[in-house]
Length: 395
Ligand code: APR
Ligand code: PHB
Image (cartoon, rainbow, N blue to C red; front, side, top):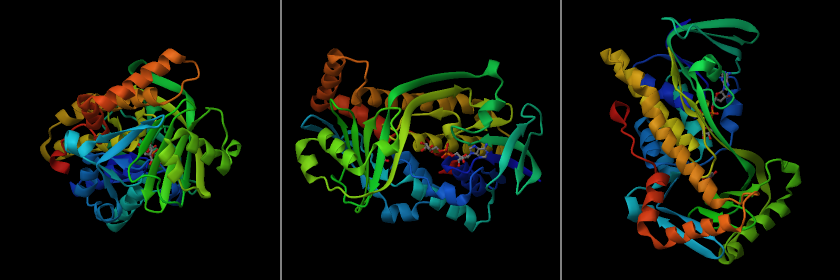
């Protein structure tokens, strides 16, 4: 088999790339390690930046999001019994869209299905070959049979545990990493959200987040130890810890119920540079990981893919390779700003076991600065709602 672009990984990055390329008349094949059922069942963050929501709409994926998603004009930061509202609409004239990644993924797979995309799922042993030559290849096994696809380009959209990073020679690749000494325990419950807007809470006992999917589905998180196991956290322990970390009036309003999903995520910042080697270009979690504080993971995957799709359109439609040559630098400029923001927000809001009262005073001073300074809030709003992204021809 031959195609123009082989996309490794059918998560949000890979499937959106296939959709944008198809709209521009560029052929692709997706090879995905997991079953479609597994990919559609994953639960992840649910905040779309303004540019991400516009990208999905431009890609023909906006219908359900417009009907069922929930635009938010602000978030709250809480500490002790204080709450600071960051009014996005007033400060930067943008908003975010609450629309879960699970829904985005479903719309993407439905769209790919509607035009008959080639999505080869449940493949094993994916390997990348000859990326520095003119005709790269991807080999894999499917139903026990060895298969090979030749192509012009390979897009590595295979997430944090994929194979595309291994195709970069170690002397050409530089990685930057920060791991945090805690995790997030997340719970999904069929209860009304405690507040119509998200609350990010900083408390002596640790961070907590109140988020939601819709009117009867809440998503809550508490900071936990890195080594905790889900079994360590009964529902009762979770609700009582969440309640203690919220301002008293929110805690009083909180409606608890049985968890329908519970999981622990370790927190990590990671960037691998560059994002291109020969005819291999990487996007999304395959190139960078951010802690979930600020919900930048999916948004970065979307912005990488917008830049990558634009680069392929320039290459195929005009023979212009500036986009492909400059892809890594352009993507990384945006990536690092989101890495910085999510690192900063993580540092501001969490309890670090090794830190002392001085560090806590600094956190509280910064929260007070946000409470009292409109420019400080505007900077927050600018980063949270998403830095500018020119959708160009893919928009
Ligand atoms: N071969 C084929 N597919 C692979 C391989 C492989 N060797 N390794 C991983 N994959 C698949 C995974 O099964 C997954 O479906 O690649 C896909 C990568 O998808 P994601 O992990 O969702 O990454 P990405 O598409 O970059 O989306 C980023 O997802 O992880 C979250 O927080 C992150 O929200 C962000 C978003
Ligand atoms: C979520 O709703 O899952 C969520 C929201 C905001 C975050 C992280 C996760 O910063």
